[in-house]
Image (cartoon, rainbow, N blue to C red):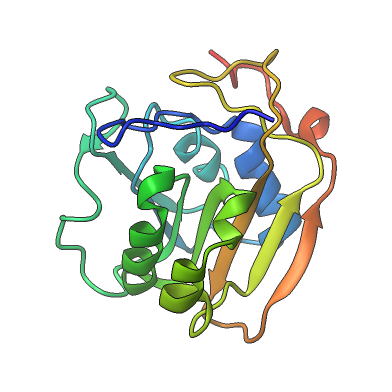
Length: 195
């Protein structure tokens, strides 16, 4: 099976299909009303995750290190966000920086953090030592159907052999649970998602 390798200076631009973000809200977080909550999407690219988050959250602040033309240009890792300045931080970070994104997001978020990452992000002695041993996700939600991500664009006809999951740290919960995101692409796709 092929693995994806990106150069060290790569922006790792693999946009999230909007339905995968709606799946987080509908099948993982499941809170009835997020309209009173704020959300930061710090690696927003062209807005394919920030737009569906705006369907649920009262306020969505979006930024990206690269000027894609959707939101403010800002480096999440170096910007001096205040602790607990946003209720949630939800993003699909560059894979090679995912660990640093989690560490910073846990300081920035008052309520919780959710990152979309390849399932293999669950592995690694280093991540276990630096994150999971002392601060494991409260929910690991594996997609039961594949989430196709294509470099530089969203594509409704794309396919993938790569597995993805939502890693969630909800500061109101204790313990860790494993769950699955049920097949939901067809029910969560919307007209205009791929334009």
